[in-house]
Amino acid sequence: MVLNWNDMRIFLAVARDDSLSAAARHLKVTQPTVGRRLGQLEANLDARLFDRLTDGFVPTQAGEELLPIAEDMKKAAHTLQRRQATLAEAVGARQQALPRVRVGRLRRRPCLFRRADMVARKLAGRAPRRAHE
Image 1 (cartoon, rainbow, N blue to C red):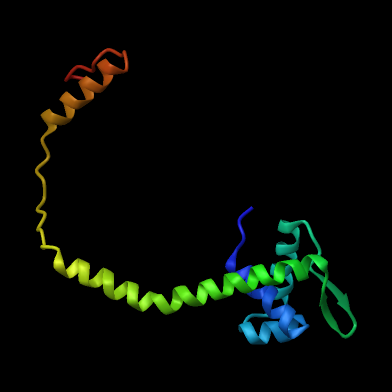
Image 2 (image 1 turned 120 degrees about the vertical axis):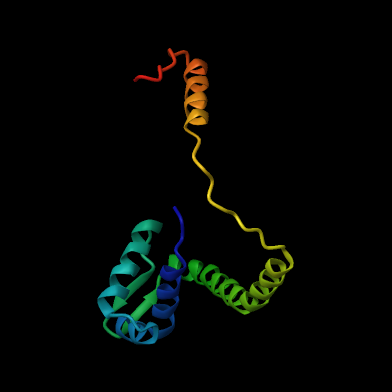
């Protein structure tokens, strides 16, 4: 099972806002989307993450255990976003340092392709194709 960061964002929003509609407003998605994604996350984890009460969503024991893991994922995602500019600058500088190489069109040489096909067929234990085939 692979955890999806977007599902973790939804989990964190529901845990913070105590309702699907408030989490949806915060994430700028629809309430049914939040409910569906939360249901998928619970199915993937095979655990109920929230008790649905009349006054809101309350994390279960499984939800409480998942909360610090989701918070760590959030911190890691924010760190990556902050570092993205630095990484992009480093990659851009490296690309500018490389010499530019112009690659022209290669002329097709049918005789080379036929020869390669014949060698491949011999290696595979099949009879080589003749030129008239």
